[in-house]
Image (spheres, one colour):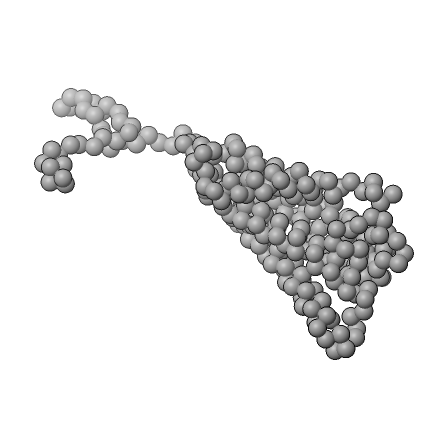
Length: 260
């Protein structure tokens, strides 16, 4: 089969060609490639420490920021789970963990692992890493919004961690924050603890809403030529579906009428 093809010696022409004229007449240049219509651009790449890690709008850097912050919160949640199991297995060995502390550890462990760790790692980290690569986009459609969404998440984590150091400690109302138990005087952290938790959740939801819209619009509008929805990888479909579901679920956390 290959010998027959080589014997035919069929020339392969480039997709784009132009006709050139010379002393021997006009001929078609089959190796000609049209120049780029748009000049090369430096897409939001930082050139200093501050512009690269603080004000950077590059999705490749933002994904690293999401990964590092999510891993930090995951380590905190892991330590809390160790303390809970240590108290259950050896209650006499750790008398400093009281019943109030146990409720607080359960609450903070659940909130960190379900909301702050998994969402940031799989949607924030893997979303910024895989979406531009797999759909053929140069970057997210809203790079500035992408940067702001991470810093909103980072501030939310800082506010959440600050609740460990306020009088009364963090809230111990359970990771679902059942009302009105969350604000009753007998619940651990019913003063500043629950307030910081609600502030942190508000910042997180606002930041995730901006990031989620960025993911959805990038998948729907910034795909490369030929990348139809039915040709998208299942990984992108999973990120798209999870983001759409989270966009419907997380804003409901901003409704604090039940606490009145």
